[in-house]
Image 1 (cartoon, rainbow, N blue to C red):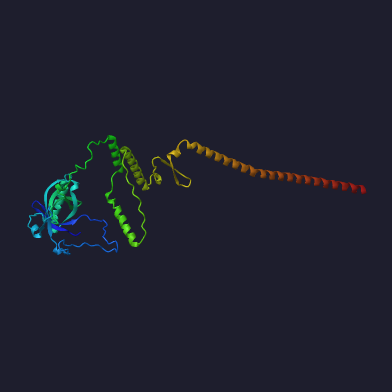
Image 2 (cartoon, rainbow, N blue to C red):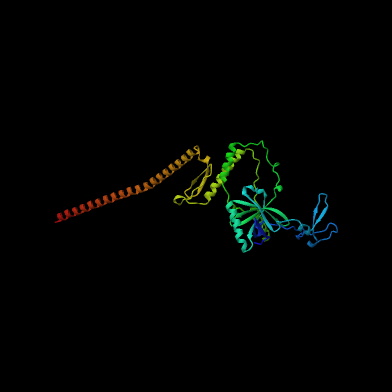
Length: 374
């Protein structure tokens, strides 16, 4: 990181050479002004109001505008003569608990790095002293031509300095405070506590700027000549009429959202089965194909069940009757065929018996005639 200021921390009689670097950066998408007619870039030029001529930076100076509009010229030499002991020094004034610093005062954050090998020992000494005391240091420093107030604290193993607004730069909130006659009931506070507990904490590392990402996608799409998809309309909040009802609804919605998030991880329970999340007022059942069908609580009421059971019974009875009919129909032809076969067999046996009797009679009559001839 590039340093923007070099100086020293004044810690009593101890001087710690340090370098100052920005601890934050701005990722906002910036735009340029262009001429709508031809798309040309619009630039600003410094023009003198007296002769209406453009001036360069070397020809530009400072002036203080008085209340009546009079301009009082101030040169760099004039400012250099002013007493500014914190011009190259971060002067520690004292140490206080961090709770004494109002977050409203905090401005830009900076990293302080030890400047050179000899500065490592006193730098580490101040860092460890801040850690053990669990306090922050209040200091003065000068940056970009003016003296500022700062707070030094430890973040991991680095000393961080936050620029602070001066106490007289904070506005009083007396005009912003709501009517003091408004009272809140204990039941409403209990619901608010329940909502806070249900929402739980938040992982700050996962937060990101959705609008900036949308702007970047818009720029990329326009650069590639792709069609733009219309954005979904954002829901607008209405006027809260019943505070208790709104809190109760918020608690239910937060619980359902938390249940969905926990169930979305598909963590297997005992036996390797995934737990199903059942929404309030709805029930689920599984079809033979394995699909889950969701039905409202009204569909599970006792009124609809008898109809469904009766329908199932009548369908089963019809199916049984059809099966019995098929069986009886299939059995009759078989019985008829068996009876016909038996009758045919009896006729065949009778014919054979008759034929045998006829043959016997013929043989007997033949024997008698031969005997008479003899």
